[in-house]
Length: 241
Image 1 (cartoon, rainbow, N blue to C red):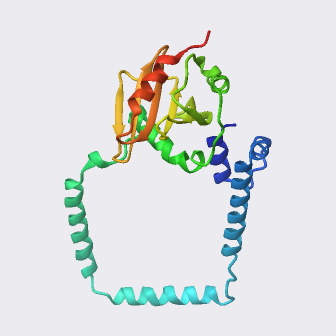
Image 2: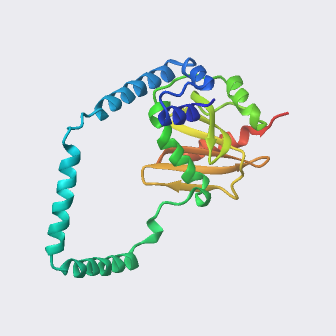
Image 3: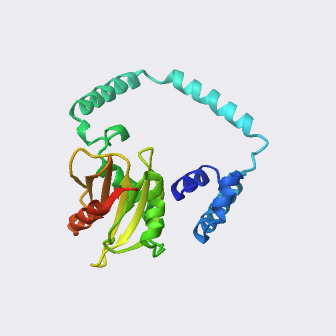
């Protein structure tokens, strides 16, 4: 079970006793810490929601409802005019709304957009990890995709694991470049039609088509040297022999 799936399932149910979840908890101190924190939060929420209900609560609610109905019957019907005005104003707002600003649906998103969303979802975890993975370990992660790197990587690999990338099995790694900048890299079994770049004003993602129906996507700070990293990774990514 990869880190993303573990975190999703644990967030959905901190008390999940599935053998896969229990095994994933014991794999790393980070997983154990996350499980412990969610257990504490779950217990706190349970304690907070245990509120004693007064014995006369039902009578009070029924009395209030009866009083509200009586007052409502005496109100003039000017509220209908207010409702009509609100509906009219809302209709005007809908006509002027910029529908292009709505979030892009997953099926319509570019690889760069998906990469940025994935980066923001995982950055708090991956930024606090340093695995110092070797090229051999990287290629072991790439093996299920039928890929391999046959050249020097553009920096040290501080994190690497499998991930779910837009419902596709992919490899997610973080490389500390020679300039000291961190670059998040995704190797995806889906080929982009051409080199694409996407930025949200803070982070930038560059996706490059690679050999044999795959793509290399590199995420870094906007304005950083992303292209040399992406080009070197694309150059050395090959089909596994």
